[in-house]
Length: 350
Ligand code: ADP
Ligand code: MG
Image (cartoon, rainbow, N blue to C red; front, side, top):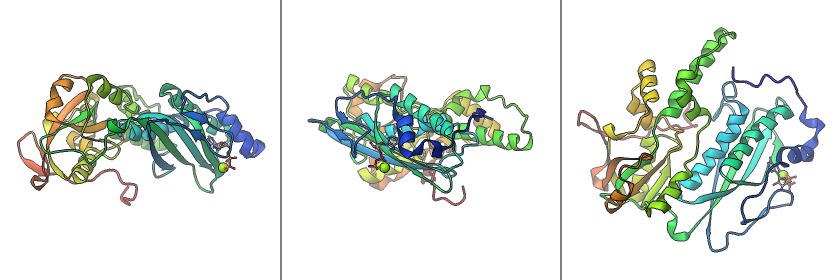
């Protein structure tokens, strides 16, 4: 339904590998002084001077991490970049460069890869990222995309997962559960479409959550906000697998416990409405849904006045001693042990 109906199909063999690389990458520009050499040689050369280099990589596989029947390739390119940038911002760093490696089967014409790269180009332009290289190869099955993101940070600004202390406040950016509920809507429409290919889905009421799934934005504004407010988080992680799983990561690595308050979890009204429609508990969706790409962090209580009332941030709990464990305090004031049911591509039930 969201597929590109364009009839043009230029086979990749017509261009050859080098022609293809050149065609896909020729319009990318360089924004950062740290990029001394980008695409075109055996390796890229970077110079971060007195800054620390931050590196993160992700591999996305068709049928495991994305489904092209409702994910347009342009969105996929954009999202693949976001997923990586989010990891750089989660270190409180500035993202500067990416490499993009793809493996494609002959099912994909040039026009499909142009769409993919249009999404990558849009992300690079909006987030001021230099594309500095990659690799291009063939695949016998589907599409594979691997992106490596690089960034820079002043040593003392870097935030790890292991610095949370008892009594620190647990804070999250934005709102949660939207990407998961967007996926529910898209999967439902896919089933309807299978039965009746002429059906025209009305996704308008779901536009926020469908966008959260198809076109997530990495929170590059949050490290900037920390700088502006003079806040130095004690620990941080991005929310790719669901709040529950990420809290458990922070707690384990920091050797602390946590009380998370159900009534503080930020939910958009469209998420609440979709949860009612699909008869899913919205807290479960926020805890286990994943792919929100918000930032979850802890701050010392003394820093609270600096973030108080900020519309981008919600205090959702506090850290405790490790022996107290990791719990959700429900609206009814019962204490439930948090377990990780986060999104897991090795989970055969999916
Ligand atoms: P090599 O044979 O040394 O692996 P390639 O011919 O694969 O080099 O790549 C030539 C140049 O194009 C390199 O700078 C490489 O980083 C870049 N490149 C290759 N594939 C891609 C891609 N899919 N996206 C961006 N840059 C790419
Ligand atoms: Mg190569």
